[in-house]
Image 1: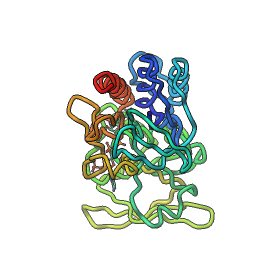
Image 2: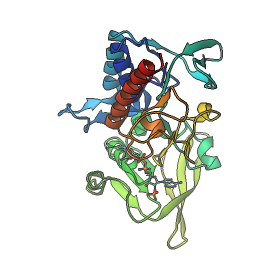
Image 3: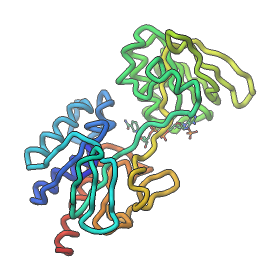
Length: 303
Ligand code: NAP
């Protein structure tokens, strides 16, 4: 049983299907995972001209199905890992019995936690520039965050919007040097260092601005924008496993070093749900392969 349809889940599916282990894969709430919201992937080895995240995920799904993976639309709502075989419930009504489980549920974007931010989700507040950027053609927008995602989103939005503000809470980026260069060299992007977002402002038409605090000078100011994009990191999707599976304080599943084995024998985890550090498509693919190989060995040893 494979839970999740990102690069980790599909890679685990390809390997377990080819090993004749009859994988069933549940796609979850976001079929294809986070990569389906990425415009162009330029750093996945083997694609010198880049590849769209959506196309890559479609290809991975096709490849998994070609070797016999039973790919199902639906979400896992409950698990019982108290004994083998494991009991997994999909959409509150379908029970699946599995000898082994691979958790590949990924992570979701974080929000700042402002009341006003929630109020305007879908009305100017977004965590996905490639999904929603189009609505801000010729307008002014802001991106909160200073990591690779924030830089990527800001660069993407600069190609659509009139102006892009980057709201960075420190005076340095967390992003890689090449990403930093990309935003610093873009005349449409203005970086506001040492700024925190205090409030999202708006009316019935949607977002009209944000109130900012300069955390060095304590000065507050308002900038007028129509789109506010969050790029402040991610939360792993591990909540439904919490009664059985050990995680760190953020919720990332803990796996045995050098393997994908969780604290429950026969349950494995791969991809972003167990990776607070690398979080790349290519590392997710790598750990997906590891999980499949771990399942294969486990089944051989525990027949
Ligand atoms: P990240 O690296 O964790 O960066 C999060 C950013 O948001 C940091 O600048 C952080 O500030 C800021 N932040 C966090 N909480 C905040 C808050 N409450 N208020 C204001 N700012 C806040 O997350 P990410 O950018 O999503 O990247 C995740 C991983 O994916 C990274 O490993 C990254 O390299 C990778 N990634 C790679 C690519 C690529 O290679 N094409 C693209 C996207 C992502 P501080 O620095 O002050 O903590």
